[in-house]
Image (cartoon, rainbow over all chains, first blue to last red; front, side, top):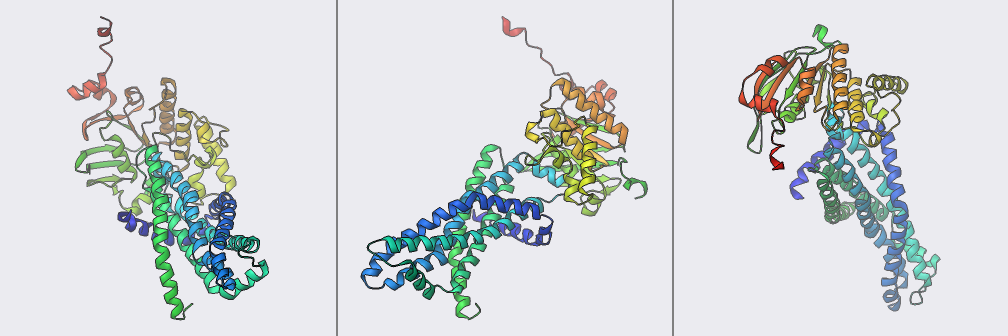
Length: 252
Length: 256
């Protein structure tokens, strides 16, 4: 995986250079965008509702027992905003959308469709990579915002319903508002944007470098998902450090 | 470049000393040949002789280790030169984009490069599809077409570029003899009508002798013979003879 980092960075750079052409490809961007939303929205809601619910369930009772009940909203709120929503949704998108990108581009590669594009002077980066990367880079942060809200709601429902917590929804949200700042939400959304770029570029790169027949496509799909997830988790740490550093400098 | 840049006029193609190795194994060992404007040149040889690799060099999908490829005397590796001449390739499998309809595939070059309005594109697409005998197939998906129809759609897609050089990779492979003849006639007809230089790579002997102005026989990365179909038929090299005369000779043995 790491031997390909150079190629992946190069593909990312070329995609950035192609960015001025994105308006031309707007139809394809929209198609991809709706496909991502369509395929993932319900899953995102279910996943984030239960993530919020389970954090509440895990952290609520011990906090309430030690009379830190006002911290429950903050724990659920911050946990979702800064870590769980961006990372879990990025992993979900890597599995659902990254795999599809690698499979589609990989099969185009195997069946010479990409060679055919090149002979028509159509760059696979403009035609295939750019719309996908842009679409996922718009869609994932939006999905993460949805996930945060639904996750908060999940946490709030459990906080009120669970006998060992017993915090009313209004109180939960006002506690949450005291602790979660706009800066934290921006942090989560920024991270998810970076994760989206990772999923898009890694999956497209894997598709474009597919060799062999159907087995090669299968291998590419697995690699795309695994590599995306590993890079998401590693970059999560780095991006969080960067964000904290910039916040301390007072730049954010 | 005077009249050479005019649409629908064939170009002259010269290949000199072309060499290519993959992982230390030499696939092309010094290829030389010349294709005159407007002729049909068939490169014939057994599987694995380097035909498809050679074709990929001509269209710019591979770069040679040594040697040059000249179109009207200009090196094709230079991007400006490559952009000046219009070339098209018809892939072995057709290589139509499976996610697009036949019509979108055929019009892809025009729509992606914004060369024509959508109305004009659909008119041109209909025209080119009719040219290859696929009238009204615009809305079909490539998956719904037979092998022969896919190849014809791929030819239509190549024609939209108004090429000066068309490269065909194994145009008759995987086709029944009747469809193979239809494709062969298509290539011949196009060549006569629009005088495009056509380079066909094939192991199909009937096709080669049926349509070629000149034939090059290639084996293991070397050209064994270049000549008119008659000259190649008369040529007395054992390797060429073996390839041209390969046939079933042992069927009676198994019965005893």
